[in-house]
Image (cartoon, rainbow, N blue to C red):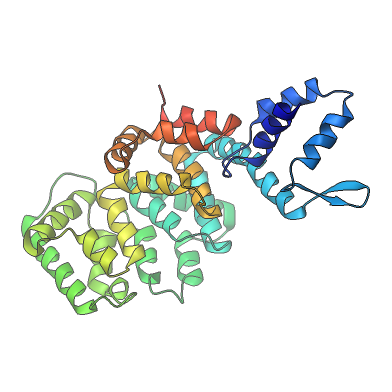
Length: 319
């Protein structure tokens, strides 16, 4: 019986908060039928969920909330997966603006989708919420230093052809370097620079790739290194999403798989798995292995549980 109780306790606990082991729970329902003493032993052996309260073992309210979130993880994944991509992106952006989610989600939608995909999300946003995405970003982020950048990013309809003006790319690499130097490492100053916002929010991804290449050639460092050193988080995320999305998304997934990952990091794991499964997941898996020396599917198998684990592995294309 002790082994059975431990098995069910592990199933309920989530083992780090990434789903629950539904098959083990269903098995216990069948095996423990008409055996209330086993359920009593389970309650006594799981002080995180139950505590003694007179003649009964009472559920802890805080753990019930945790458990509800873990049971919902698989449901939320499937609902996101079933949505039209435009609606999904519109709803993700709306959550950011109205429920204090990280601004990085808006950056992802604006910078890693094609011009037509972003336009579709903007149309869906209007149909769903009776406002434009641009006006909601401008209003909700009006007191943030990155407001102008976000408005520019979500308003963009970037050229997607291969042509690049090399002279302009080189000049803008110099301009970015001058802006980084002028900011002097003061957090929030660089993201308010009008020239920086113009370059990042209007230029094509091919043009920006050349600009960032020239930046390294001229200044001896990658631009993302300077942004990270200057604590320019939103700018750093923007540059990575535009120039190296697979690297960015692999870092987001790794953060969601860490021990002690917070609520937003865990939600991001689901979001990336769903939104990138049909796009660039093979590249994300390769970037994950290159950066962290392990296979993404192995990390998921070790950290996640139950149907949620199986769904994640299916979305990342585990063999």
